[in-house]
Image 1 (tube, rainbow, N blue to C red):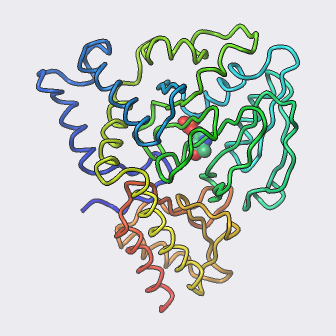
Image 2 (tube, rainbow, N blue to C red):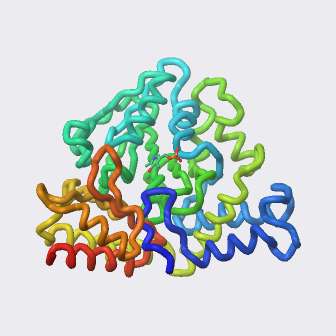
Length: 355
Ligand SMILES: *Cc1c(COP(=O)(O)O)cnc(C)c1O
């Protein structure tokens, strides 16, 4: 039987998606060729890219005036591409909300190109909350947030909005809950947390914001080039885009993001209720900022965690060790993780408490 996969990333994917991907690696579209050994410009692969883009637009309700592209380099390259494309060459300024490891890294890259400032940070409490009520300077080229903090298990519920451009790294909760794309000028997400295998990154960008920095942008880093070439400027990560497309088809099949959000809420409620009830454990994130994707929890002092570790492993659970910067446990409940897997973890927590 397959493990209950709580991996923080790369993530669990629906088993029917994995099966179809496996078939296509051997024989794609009955071409008697593998998906990964044919030209990315062949009509079958172009159709995959077109469908992936169309599904992103449909599932998120992307309005007119935005482009959707797939690029390589992960979310980490977006930390670099964002300031290259949006920060003015002369006197460029950007504001970052620092809610964890990934926003810290994004900020660090932006500082190489201009005056990137941290408007607020939750570092004082090891990033266990989302700062609120801070001021965003009105003269910045853009404001950058991270919707879900994969490592520390916090999630922005009400997005702060800047007067200027709003940019969001949604790597670990895109397609997990409804968002209003029109509230953002740019959204990016690495595929491997909630959409597909590593290799592709989706970028949703408002067309009118591009080409205004006066910067000489290296070709690969220029969003406009990827838009003009329809994500085929160079060889795209075909396998990653294909599996992402299959996952988005699956998501559409179960009723889209609205339905997914309900399922994710049920999973998160089930686990957090147990964390709060169980006398052996406690959650690390502030309750109002808890992530529905990554639940971080610790065992109380003196609890025999070696026994707990043995028990969850014996129950077929995988991937709940916490990140080294938090310790304890982190259960990641991405879209494809079934409610039954969360129930299996809750059952082990209850059995453990009784021992
Ligand atoms: C994992 C993660 C990243 C880094 O993604 P890469 O694709 O490995 O560069 C960035 N931001 C968030 C929120 C993440 O969860």
